[in-house]
Length: 547
Image 1 (cartoon, helix red, strand yellow):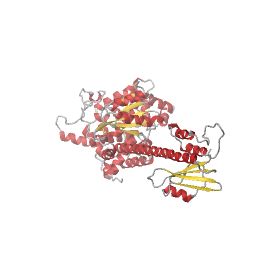
Image 2: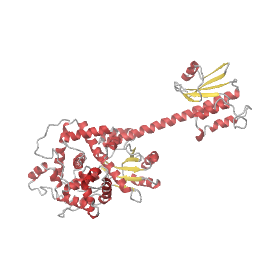
Image 3: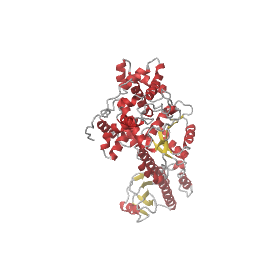
Image 4: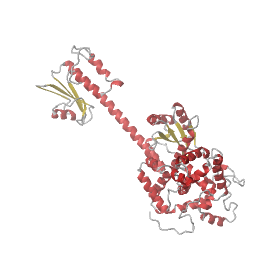
């Protein structure tokens, strides 16, 4: 330690005027030897004394605490003098300023030894101070770089959070400052890269490299092993797949092309695709667009029903309404904890906002049929705001989008439920659509055919997965309550539900669009009764709403 003399042969410089100390000092500049504490200790040993270093605030950085002249130390720190020396009966002390010339304050290097400072020890002290300046400057640069990376990462997360709540205007404004043109697009894909949490920072850096500035790369705030990418253009998908090939143990899930306003929906698709990627040899999958139940409903009737169901929220200020709707959409897709992390708020805030929506709609989100119904309305509202009214008739990648209905008519399951398609009785059709109830939306033959085909896949399993799934949904997704009804163990219920997932090609144990589609299928087939919604009756007068 500083102040102790070593014996012969310990490798330290001797008082013979040789230059061994210079080589030892240079060794402290090697990448493996850049340790300020070790360097200060070495200095004390080499000059046969004691050394210490204080930073620009006067805090001890390295070495033992020493009795120093506070006035001299203060003068050196603020730059009035560059160095000082003192001596008394206990020995000799040298003080040197260590730091950049420009700052108003700098560090102070202090060395005390019993003998006077000769030319050799003065040279060692001066050169060591120079090396310390280099090391301190490197440490400051590293710290500044770390702060910059953290700030950049926080900014990317903030942009993602704005996209998640559909505030695309603000997201573009924030992104334009550092990444001009990044979000100058109407559509994008969301990818989720899953890997070892300890390797996530490295994977995120690789993602930034392979996407070449054409993606918003965010360390997921909810899942430690996930990296979220909002990708612009069609070229990054293959680059990300090559990244998976180079990193064993990683998985990649991607969404279909969505508008920026539907980033939250695209994120849900990417997470859903991860489940498929786990069983694929290339460990990557892109969400396959399916025939969604809302596409098999009468579009005009669905729009009118959605507007009526969500009308109580129209009384709120615009920003409050948007905040509640965005939070509820995420809260229905994910757990409250995950939604809170993605939005950057507390889980209590998420629950409070969702409870407020419950109160306004006079519903109960503990009922899975209610959750599925409100999710249907919220998804329809987003599609309307996004300019997608469900009438485009586009097929999904798997070709299901244009499947024929029971009577052979094509285009979103035939849509034979649409009134007035030949122009006759148009006024009466519009009136019927405006008065449509949830039961009417679920009663179309195309939707019923889709639901029966979907749930019919479970009939081949001898364990009667269909019965278990029906009771599990009726119990609000609670395995314990469903087990009591079925007189089986709760673990049996969970295993049955988990077994139904690959058959239905949908995630069920995790809340989200997949589960709500299966719930709507049960409602469409009559396996479960539609929920009682206070605003589902078109003839019912609006009750006072207190938001």
